[in-house]
Length: 390
Image (cartoon, rainbow, N blue to C red; front, side):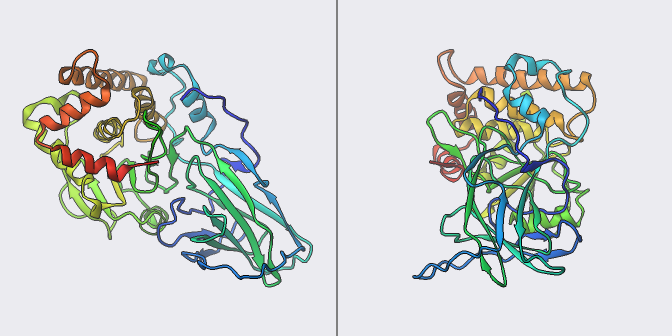
């Protein structure tokens, strides 16, 4: 996790709030024109085939940012960048830069272009894809020469171009930085991020776009609900509070489990709920899935700890990710409470020592603990198969 952080470019802006789009490409995405506020519906996919004869690119439109080949777009705010690159021991100080504000949200990537033939009301279409042939592209309409896009994946190369009635421009590419959580902008849903993007000890990665974590969903507004349902295509609401009734976001299938947290998961009386929770991740029919509690920190953090360790992520990265909740509105109340949360995650780690020897890795201890709940080797292998990719 220790790496040199490149300077944020002008393409990464922290304040724009006009567009949300899924980085994973699941379902439709809604965009909002940067100048007028008009909401438009994005086309889900681009054609899978390309013409045999390449059409000359339109020359009146010039792509500006992100610049072609740019590789240093960091999808995190300055405090998060500092957090992910500071010495690990510093993070255990509850006064370390943690603030009660919603910093668990991504900055926008701002796409800009110029047009020699610009005219009032002229319509443009931005295409954005993870594939060089622009297949499975997300499409957005704009009536200005600038558009803000949120919720892109980390550590991912993207391709983009712009078209108008006169034709289509050449295609630019850029890459987002890895090594940071993939935050999700979903208004009024605090502390929301993708569990994926982290590298495992064996050189694999946790998949992005299939498992999300957050605080409670009751405060979600229409924008946030659209992000969850349409942009991210989430199917399952795994409510770790054990709350009765349906999901706070209609359209999600709810699984309600009253999960305990930290050292309490080792009590025999609570292991059955841990087993039920993990079995929800062993069922591929539940994906994409969002798991949460009230703050998105304690029960959610405990579950994320177990999942990431089971899949082979190193302990320091897991704990850094846990501390990230301290930058959210829901996960940060006071330095005193954060000091308690730091102690609790330490007790969780210490409790796992009872499930292995001094020589055993955290990954082995977590596996042994989960087997003690009644889960099988096949259950755990299924979770890893779903969550881990090359």
